[in-house]
Structures are given as C-alpha cells and as structure tokens.
Image (cartoon, rainbow, N blue to C red; front, top):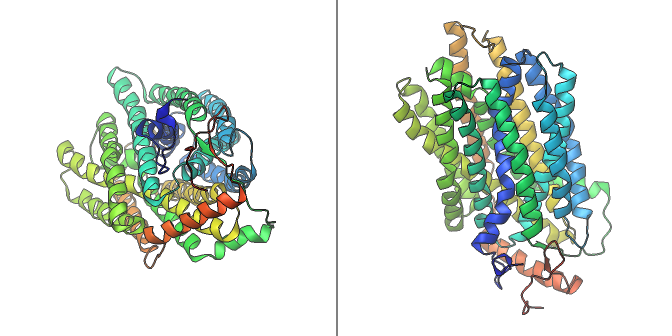
Length: 473
C-alpha cells in the first residue's frame, strides 16, 4: 500500500487517495444521467413502447426497490468482516449491475413491459449495492465536517466526469452518422466497463475504518423511530424535492430543447454536457461555501440561484447556443452543489444518531436518502410523461406536435423544477447541526470508539493497518 493511500494524523486522506476512492462514482453518475435522460426516451422512441408504459415501468420498479434499499442498508451496517463493512457490498453489487445492463442492452424491438420491469429491478439492486456502500463508506472515510465536504466534492466532481464522458458518446457517434439507438447502446457498454474498473480500484486501494458497535440491542421500532427525528425529516424532505426538481427537468429535457427551443439533438447533448460539466466548478464551490457559511446555508444559496437561472430560460432567444450555454452552466454548477451538500449532511446526521445510540446507521441513512431520491426520480418520469400524454404531446420519432402540445411541454419543463427546488432549500430553515456542534459530536465519538474498540483501524483490502502509529487513545 502506497503512502498516498494512508490516513494522515488529522484523518485527512491525501488527494490521490480521495480521487481513487471518488472514482467509484463515475459509472453511477453516468448511469444516473442515462436513466434520467436517454433510457426512457430510448424505450419510447426506438423500441416502440408507449410513454405511459415506460413511465409506469420506471416508476414501479423504483417503488419496489425502496424496501430493498432499506434491507441492504441495514445489512451493510450489521456487516463486519476483516475486509470492512461496505467494501464487500460494493464488490457484490458491481457484477449484478453489469449483467442487468447487458440484458437491457439486448432488449429486442417491441419488448414487453414485463421484460423491461424485471431487468430494471435487477439493475437497481446492483446499482444500490454499489451506490449505497460507496456513500456509506465515504461517510466513514471522511469523519470530520470539513473533510466530508472535500470528499463528497471529489465524488461529485468525478461523477461529473463520468456523466460528461457518457454524453460525449452520442455527440460523437451521431456526428459520424450513427443512430440514436446505437448511441444509447454505446453508452451502456461504457457504463458496464467503467463499473468493473472503478469498483476494482476502490475495493483494492481504499482504506475503510472498521469500528465496533456498542453491545446494544435494536428492534424494528428503533429504526422507525428515526422518522420522528426533526433532522431526519428535514433531510428526507429536502432530498426528495431537490431530486424531484432536476429529475423532472431531465425527463423531458431532450423533448423541450429539440421541439420547443429548436436545437438539434447534437446541440442539446452539448448543452447538457455544459450543464453537467459545470459541476467541475459547482462541486468544489459548494464545498468551499459550506465550510464558510455551513452546509445547509450553502444548499439554500444553491437552490435559490438554480431557480433564478431557470426563470431566464423562457426569456432567451430560441436556438441561441451561446446564451443558453451560459445559463446552463450557471444552473448546472448550482445543481452539483445539491448532491455535495445532501450527501455530506446525511453523514453528519448519522454521526449525531450514532453518538446517542451507539449503533452504526450510515448505510441505513444513505438507503433512506436513496429511497427518497428514487421516489423523486420515479415521480419525475411518471408525472412528466403523464402530463405530456395529457396535453397531447407525441414522443414517437418523426411525429409533428401541435402548438398546444408544445406549450404544455414548455410549462411542464419550467414550473415544476423551480417549485420543488425552492421547497428543498426551505426545509433547512432552523437547522442547527453546525460545524461546531458536529466537531463536539466527533470528539465524543472518537472517545467512545477508543473505549469500545481500541484496536479499530483503517484497513485496506489486505487487512493492513493504515492508522497512524500515534493515534490518540
């Protein structure tokens, strides 16, 4: 194990170690983009499924997957092996995700809803195994308030790279004469390969702190009691709405930018790439801002600026790539901050609960926020596709829509995201888990961990002790 992957005495990972760990989010972000923007359109436009069928399939599978996520989160938190809690789950989830993506890639034209639903469900199980374990692991690999902003900023930043790269695939292939369907299939092959390589890198080189729980018995009612905590309710509501807004927008993005604003498919993908690429600035900017005004206030700033940017879209000249690229960059930079702040705040609240209970909750906490994200994503596709169908919009390739249908598309694209994102920011009015409060929580947790398990260490895949030799007792 190289020195670059060791944990410094102040619990801060080196930059190479942070980037290696954060690489696990590259395929997750790429897949999230493909699911939000390209896959629903692919099944509706290229494979001949009705909009309502596609929307219902994506919504239903996410509702079914939510209790599975909760079970996975609980299982992860109860797992204790010499290789770590979360490492083993990430290694198990990756091949399941890759195989399910291959089966979706092989979908024949005219595929039925049952086939789509079944393999989407398997895909989400694998996705959850990788994503939940990576998030929970991040919460443990970065124990301090500021370090979490740094690590989750890196995770979001490399996720931006994955999303941008997967967007470049259809841009390049369509310029070479490939069809939309061929471009989507190439995107899926990239995600399959990136999942295997990044998971291997993370599980082999990244350290994981394996701390022993206090010997306390927990029953099902203790988990339900989480939902009565004000900070948990704030977090879940904010995550639901901050995901629903951009997810709503993403579900009909290509329809809006091609049929309403007059951009070509290639131009629309380039603008989306600018939106995603703005995360390279937005993620570290959000982390920087959070460490100066606190995470929840940084989130409120991001949601406000994001909404103001969306207000500008209908006022700009249609088809003007330069002007739209500037606004899309602004909005995208703010959207990247949503993820950084929500994920970092989740880990802070998990620490607060662990101090009170003596039990690890990190995996379950991320399962809960992932559940709200899936509810939002499912709702965004189901609701927007249902709205488009209600206003008479036709998604089938080659169809010419009426002005009334286009107007309905425009209203759906703008109103929903602004409304939901502003609610998300308002959820943290009165939130009091500040940096000072979290520092005290971490101090007490460190003392508690030293008493319960003085031999706990940062361990690599081989079980090598990566903790500083002079770690305080």
